[in-house]
Amino acid sequence: MCVFTPKAPSLPNRIEGFMKLPRFRSAFAAATSILLSVAFGSAQAADKILNLYSARHYQTDEALYANFTKQTGIRINRIEAGDEALLERLRTEGKQSPADVVLLVDAARLWKGQIEGLFQPLKSSTLQARIPAHLRAKDDGNGSEWFAFTTRARIIVYNKSKVQANEVADYQSLASPSLKGKVCTRSGMHPYMLSLIGAISEHLGEAQAQAWAAGVVTNFARTPRGGDTDQIRAVASGECAVALTNTYYLARLMRSDKPQDKTVMQRIGFVMPNQSNWGTHLNVSGGGIARNAPHRDEAVKFLEYLASDQAQIYLADGNNEWPVVPGVKSSNPALAALGEFKQDTLPIGSIGRSQITAARIIDRVHWR
Image (cartoon, rainbow, N blue to C red):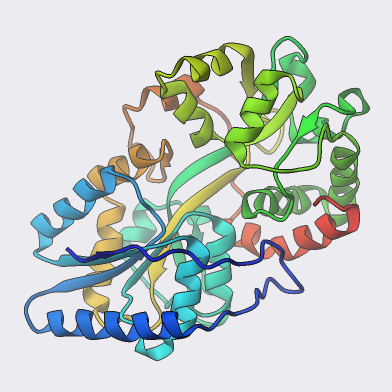
């Protein structure tokens, strides 16, 4: 197995216009792409291989890949990097790219790859039968498609000594005047926030979503900063009373043996928002076949394998997420503690497209 983990390039975190980030071309990227193409190419004659570009970096994935090779005889060559670094590599390599499958960990980034035509069509009866329709991003006209393989929810956490659960029962409540000076968030331009704001605009319309976002900004306890774990810790410390987080960050703290993490969990509660209407917002990790995949048959087998019961459990447990295939159950105790809840079933493709609207809203309300 070939594993190369390049350092992700420094990329801007703002979305300008129609989600077109500036493209950074470097001698290093070009040189490494050539070297990798040669390395991958020399292995092609030896045996069946799959060249995987993955933004996943979890220990359980080693068993995932080993099991696929054992079942199929297909050896996996792997490049691991951040989502943006992998997308930039695909752009730089163009038609010479050795990538067969690309796995990314957010709908915003997957959608970006889709609209840039970095994936190709895949009509698989296995994937269509096992993955729900709203978790498959269909061809938008350029033949580019991808599939979700795990889900995570974006939920509300609150300080139990400052806020009651019924005060934050839905996303709309974050704009309530009663929470003035009590809300912490990360940057509005982060993909997690763009996906949520985009989904809210799909449900409420752009005007109402913008009014909501302006209300949230009014309620900020501090300037947006940090990641989701930082928001959870800020709620526990009392710096703010309410915040948003992806469920896997909370699950990591639930499973931690560190005394400071146990203290955090004692001080906070969580809410699965919008159970009385459209349900809690879901984001995904997923992937597709690279546009210029040299081993398409192997790529199809790999994606279909990712929808198998065994692979779904490997994928989900790797990052404390839920399988996408109905009926597949994880034994993860943190996921069990989160309980059953109503999920938003907005098509994942529409959530991607709505990020153009979300970016406009963020700029207008100055959610930095």
